[in-house]
Image (tube, rainbow, N blue to C red; front, side, top):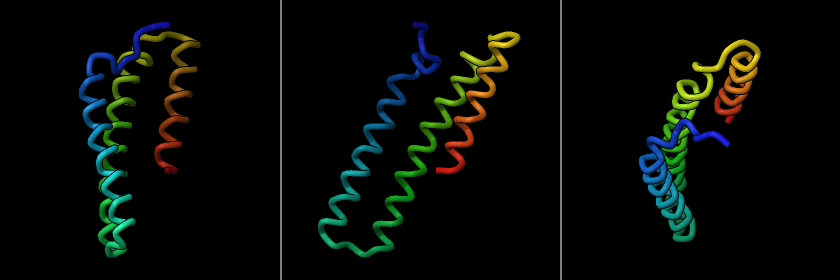
Length: 92
């Protein structure tokens, strides 16, 4: 198995994901404490944007590390795979 494209920034991604994890725990606490709906929704939006930032970083690294160096049929397959991943991100 080859090294993932994000290996150089793995620590940064993990740090961001730990912050998102903390945000989600905070949202759960807000719900447990019956906080105002709009305040909860604001925090959900912030956590969603943070996850999207991680996803975009991973996608960028995938394109540079996995797609760009590929050639021929392999590159076409990797572009299709990346396009499908982008479509899933846009739908979510």
